[in-house]
Length: 229
Image: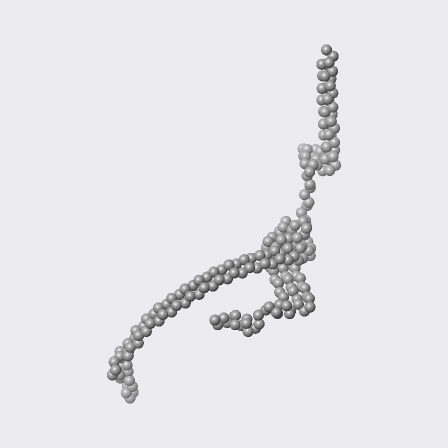
């Protein structure tokens, strides 16, 4: 009869040990949570709030000020395809007869007799015009540059402006960008994408011997403007 009692005592002590371990673990978890900010409200008498152990506190919103720098990543691509076809036809006919004429006799105007009959004009005009045009344009622009915050508007929007000039052996490359950025669109690495910039303005210009090599001359530009053919 002593054997069942021994089994009952074993179950009792096992349950007691498990309960003690759970209580110690719970107290240790609360202490650790108070120290690391996982539990809130215990010191102020507020309801207990628990956060996951893997919880990572969100960083406060970054505050931007005038003259801060932001890296702008420009990645612009555009493809345009246009086709046009026009056809015009015009046909006209004319028939005219000169039935009466006049002649000057002294100071008076008198009817003139048509000795060879009434002159007659008869003609036909046929006109045909047809034009066909195809245009395909592909543009791509990709670069990165720093821009300065020139204004922080009352609603938090950032007005940026940047300019970069590169000179090499008499050649000059100039790049200018400007636009409006929302603070939440600025990435953690302090950069912003071009598609997130409102009222984006990009200007690129080249001057020097290299651009002059492929730039059309004055006469070619004039003929393109006049377009006689």
